[in-house]
Amino acid sequence: MHRCWTIPELTRLITEQLDPRRRKTDRPALAALARTCRALLDPSLDVLWRHQDTFARLVWLLPEDAIRFVMPDAEWKHCFMLINTRPLLPIDWSRFNFYAPRVKSVGAINWLPLNSASDSPYHHTLEVAQSSVLTLSESIYEAFKEHLPCPILPHLQELQWVVPGILFDNFHYVQLFLTPVMKRLYLAIEWPEDQEEYGDFLIEIIGVLPRCCPYLQELHLFNGNPFVSEALGEIVSQLVNLRSIAFWYMGDQLENLLDKLRELPHLRSLHLRGSEDLVVPAGIGKAFTLHRLTLDCMKYGAIMDLLSFMQPGPLKYLKVEFYDIPRSDEVRDFLVSIRDSLADTLEHVDFSTHDDSIENSIDPDRPITLETLHPLLDMPKLHTLKTFTGNTWDLDDFAIKKTVDAWPLLRVLDFETGIWRLPKVMTTLDSVMYIAQNCQHLESFSLSFNAYDIPALDPVIHLPGNYTTYEIRRPRRPEGLTTVYNECGLNSHTGVKEVNIGESKYQNRAALTLFLLKCFPNLEAIEGRLPAEAMGVVVENDEDEGMDDMAEEDGDGEDMDEGVEQEGPVMVQYEPDGGNTVQHNQVQREWESHETVPWSDYLKDFKGRIIQDFQFAYIG
Image 1 (cartoon, one colour):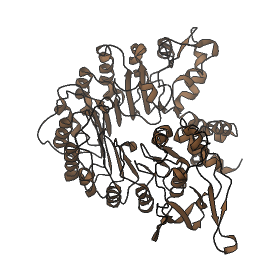
Image 2: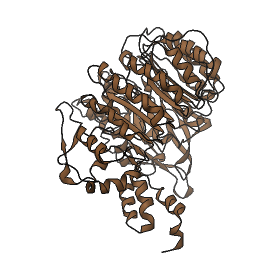
Image 3: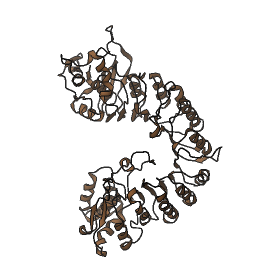
Image 4: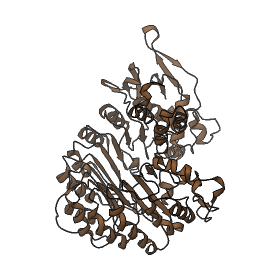
C-alpha cells in the first residue's frame, strides 16, 4: 500500500466527495470503498453513517430475532413501529456500538418551516417519508436506557425529533439523544387531539436544553402552546450560542421574549409564528441585529407593529405570511415600510397569505399593479422575489420590464406562481424574451402571459453549450405582413432551469414549449395548469385567432384532443455548405398533448421526441 493512504486527511477528503444524502448511488459506492482496504474503512463508514433519516437503520443492527415491525393503528398507515421481542444481552449491542459513534445527524436533510394544525399533515410535507422517531416503540427506548450509556449517540450534532400524536407519550425519550455537542434541534408532536396534554412534555425538554446542549446554535419548536411559550422565555437567555430560532408563540409576554432574544450575541435568524389574536408590542423598541426574519400567520396590523418594534437589520432575508388577504393599499404600505428601513441590505423578499384565507374573496377592482410594487424598485440588491397573496394581479409588459431593470442580480422571480386571477392577461411573450435577454443571473421565474401569438425565433449564431442568438419574427398578421425586429436579437439564457406559467393563455402547446426551450435551452421543468383548462376556450370558438396554425382536425369534427395531437409541421432551417438558407418540411410528429398530461410529463416527452438541433425548428 502506498504511503499516501496512511495520511488520514487525504483519505477523508476522498471519501467526503461522496454524499449519500444527495445521491442514492453514493451509498453502495461508500460501502464498496470501505471494503477496499483498512485505510479507507473508517473514513468511508464515517461518511456512510454520518446522516440517518430515521433511527430504524440503527435498530436493525440488533439481532433479527429480537425486533419486529408492527402497525400501531390502522389510521396511521405511514407509521410502523419497531418493538423488541426478547430480552437483549450485552453482546447483542456490539454492532450497534460500532456504528453509533459515527452518526452525527438524524432526521430530514433540510428542515421545513413551522406548520399549523390547518395545514396538510406534517409527515406528508416533510422531506423524508418517515420522521426521526416514527418507527420506535417504548420498549426500544427502555432497552436503550438499560443497556447503553446516555447519550445514546455521543457525537450527534443535528436531531429532528417528530413524534406522531398517537405516540406522544414517547416524546420525553428525546433526552436520551441530547448531547453536549448538539448544534441543531427540531422538536415537534404531530397534532394530538388535546394540545394541553403535550405541554408538560415540551416544557420538561425545554428546561434541560441549557444544561444538556450548551452549544446549541439552532432551535425549532413546532407546536404552539401558551405554557411552552412561557417556558421558552425562561431559558432562552441561557442559550448564548444560539444563532437561529423558530417557534410558535401563543403567550402574552412576547415583548419580554423579544427583549431576551435581542440580547443574544450570535442570533442572526428569527422565525416567529403567531396566530389570529396574537398581541404584539407597540411603539419602537431597540434595534434587532438579524440577517433573516420570518413572520408567519399574523394579521396585517401585527406584522407592521412588529417590524416597527423590532427594527430588524441589517436584514437580507424577509418572509411574511399574512393571516388574511391584504388589500392592495396594505401591500403597498408594507413595501414602503421595508423600503424605508431595509432598501440597502434586503436581498430576498417573500410575502404571501395563509392557505386557509387564500380562497377568500378579494375586491377585483383594486388589483396589485406596478404602482403597488413600486417601492421594491428601490432595492437594487434584491435577487429573490416571491409572492402569493391571493390578490388579483394586473401587470403588463412595461411593468415586467421596469421590475427586471431594477434588479440586476435577480435569480428568482415568482409572481403568484403565475395565477393572477384576471380574465384577460396583459403580459405577453415579449416579457419572457426580455427576461431571457436581461436577467443574466436568473434561475427560475413564475409569470402569467398571453401566448396566443408566438414569435418565431430564427437562429443567427449557434455556439456550443446551447448558446444561440435568434432573430425575432412576429406571426403573420391578417394583412399578410411579417414584422422582424432587426435592431436587436435574442440571446438564449442557459441558466434558467424552472418556469411556472400558471394560468397563461395559449392555443398551441407544442409551439409554446419549443419557444420556451429556445429561450431557455437548459429548461428542466415547466409548471402550470393543465392544457384542458388553458385550451378550453379554443374548443368553444373555432374562429379564434391562431386556429389556422393548428393541425387539421378530422372532417367529422372530432374532440379537442384530436386537434392538439398534431400542432403543425416542424420546419427546419439550415445552410448547407454555407449557401443560402433553405427550408425542409419534416414529417409532423404526433405530440401527445392530452388534456390530462401535466406539464412536467409533457416537457419530458417533448424533449425526448424533438430533433437534436431544435434551435433551427419551429412549429406553426
